Length: 246
Image (cartoon, rainbow, N blue to C red; front, side):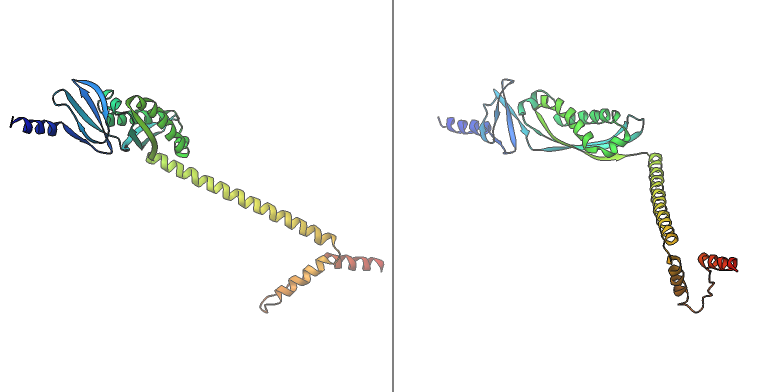
């Protein structure tokens, strides 16, 4: 009898298992899945039962750079990060052998597939849309593994050096084009304003005389300037008319 109590205590101790708050325990009875253990101290029948812990915290899968070819035949490298968490511990253990490795491989193949269906401009300007497409495809497969894919973020898209130079030249040409257009628009407005001013001076009596006097006043402010006085055409016409009357 004196050995029974220590034996019972020993059996209880080896049967007692701790499941942390961020874990779930998957219990097997004689090799068959039985139930899920919630956090706390739990008893497992030795020999007949076994269990495995599953971490249910959100995890990040850093997908390494993948060589991809876009729809318009441009070679580039892109990488991403995928955040996921376990929602069904039983499926994560029973359906897939290594869920992290499976998620990594699925993400890599999905990235190459989505990139091949998009042009380079779409990859660069619509990164959020591309990320949502990757998320949709990955989530469709990962649900069967008891995984909830929370988000996908594209980290970097690396272009060949030749493509970077080409894009830089294209951007420079576009800037020059816009500068030329702006300058031409400015010249057009200036010419229109000059035409309006000339028309006003020609149609308003005395306007040309006032403009001439104003110009002479501006020039005469500096004594070193040599003033060449241009006789207005109206004066010449008046002299010509006076001569004809004689």
